[in-house]
Length: 282
Image (tube, rainbow, N blue to C red; front, top):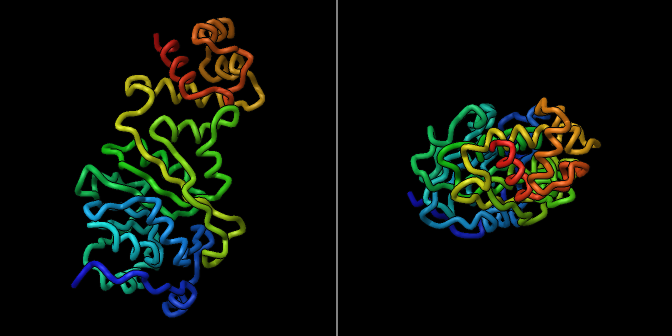
């Protein structure tokens, strides 16, 4: 049977599918099922999937997005945590031969365990509460995906894509691995049940290597966590406390890196963090 179906694909009605299987969205898992066809197509467009690509989909839910991914990619590997959704998911995807559904927790799975190729994409429409953990898991894995396209709260998307003076530990942790941008906005009404806020699709194009040398990554993240641990404090004070360094030594290291010790962490650029990390490691 062909793995390609005519476009546009007929829409799915999440409420009807759930009712037919005597299911409800699990609030504890933060389930909101994206069903708007236009929004689904925008996610696929943002991913720029080639016919030869393998896509790792995290959180396929009822399979609405999975169908569109399968129409565009060579292979889709979909990882779903909620075992209750497997029967309707398999039912929806019964016509596609290029989709593999795995029941599991992506946070406990290494992509290398389940993805048969080293060059792959990740597309995720996941509960908002695991956004940071999943991003960290995907960006620190080996081999890393070529691109990550993730649907998150609009506020979180803005934080991921921030620049000085509005940086955060989240934006820094993502941008050290690649370049993020907001690809599109998805209104709350595109989901069932509708969340309270709008979402955004973030596209992250990963670099071949991190912006910080591998040997210095642990120092970099320790520094960043220290810098952002106390928002209202200067770098001199927050890094001294977080890294357990004498304030005078912290100040001299910051000045050697060309950074005013009275600045705050959110004002530093990635280049300044790299220079500071190098000074700390020297």
